[in-house]
Image 1 (cartoon, rainbow, N blue to C red):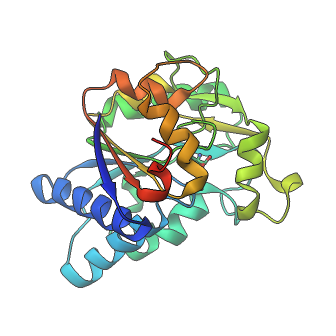
Image 2 (image 1 turned 135 degrees about the vertical axis):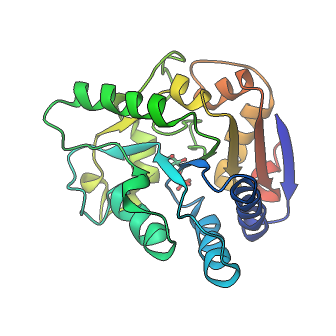
Length: 241
Ligand code: GLP
């Protein structure tokens, strides 16, 4: 794992944006994996600026998202469909047909999981997957205890994850209890992975990740089994290492 230590959130966001833009410059048909949460918001702001000011085009780019909450309409303000549209897609020239986000309203979630994996296999592999890290070490919504061989599946969210995400909803009760997520195995199929961590809330998780111990109880540790992972971490998140 390559570690890039930066001073703060804004430097992390800029560095990550430059890496994505280099990928697109190299191949304008790149397949990108996007993440949600507070961490990539600054990155997405930088990508929008790169598009508007410097003409970086996403016309031929395809994208996959890691996960989606269950039980929310696509248009719910807390859904990841809404998150991606509001924070990135509406301000870049990506084609709506090139965007993949798991559907959480399918009649059969089992079929939807299968469909999502098939689409990843048909269009992919993902060239560059962006990841955040949960305070409990989750990636996507793969919570502690997740099977490293998992593909897309439905999960019950950990109490800490629902707590961490309360600020995206009005109250804890409104945070969904379940989600659909790409599995650890599906994530590790990406050619390159860019993991972002910022702020003291992530310091414990970064310390545990960089200890190098691989454990099912700490999902992000499976990233050690991938040959091309870059962690961009700011000083606050790095301070316990
Ligand atoms: C959610 C997402 C994850 C994300 C995590 C961290 O649970 N499903 O993909 O990495 O939150 O969130 P934040 O960036 O807000 O700390």
